[in-house]
Length: 84
Length: 317
Image 1: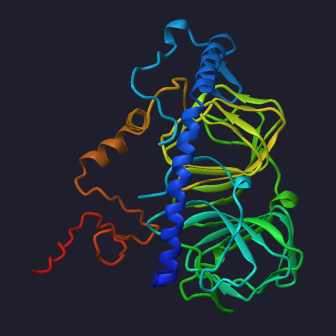
Image 2: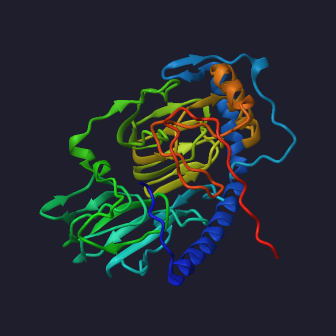
Image 3: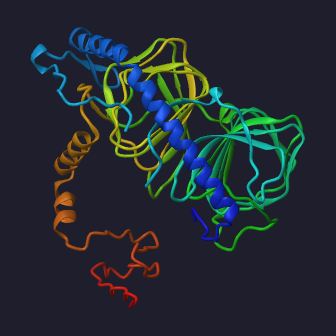
């Protein structure tokens, strides 16, 4: 049994509401920080796409496959998000 | 609504707060890592102040406790760093104390943190599933045993495995100079906390000691790297499968679509059955079976899988 049904007290309900509100603030801060990371991320992605063509892409454990230039994905025009 | 995507978050950046919820003794502080807005299930960094004392008791929710530093005493036994407890809902544990204090992680899996003083188990408690182990001293590292696997240099110790969901809790480590050049996503939610060390992911940058994430399904993460080594605790809420690829720009919908397509090809018979059966909630004869629309949990052990349900009457206005 993972959970026993019970009636929550007002105090508990208030605590959850307060924590949810704080979590929303935390989430917005994370999104802003991650948006600011975009220039660095673009460089990391470029390095990654280079490495998988030269050293290889990890298929399984130590098995690597070199990606051919025509297989390399192209960045779409839509907005790029990492936090959802 | 389930927990949101919290990634990355470093708990060292925020102060502890006193836990003042009903039932919990004084002397317990916490930092919230993530919380489910609907049911209050949450993951927290917890500090037991020196001299903390807790009477015997139980929680309404299944919970897990991991000691990072310091120690706690339960009954006569002292549990130090690396100690892990899996406590099913309603299972009473003996009186606990922490004479010198302790830093821990607590995971309340299905409801808000609750503590009810009691020296006996709840009648429905599944005591047989209680688990306590010192994972540093009594478990050994092994390679991940699923296919496709993480790169060499990432090892695990499985702390708890849920037979029904195949979700599991595990310690993992990355060796110095670990690297894995692929992008991964999973069908499950995943969360992790860095006990020690810094690792790097291509989307989110560096995650240091005290770093945490809660990641819902189908979100890209990786490539991966770790310069000096990392020790962390991870959890999933269901079976973990590594959907590896190398397109950094796919989104959740595309990843889910790909996962569904893969299931269609890996298990065509089952996929077709689920899609065409018409009564779309399969039954596992090993488990009690409930429905979301209000009827009582019931078994289908007699093979009567095909069954109808009366619609609930609507109230007249």
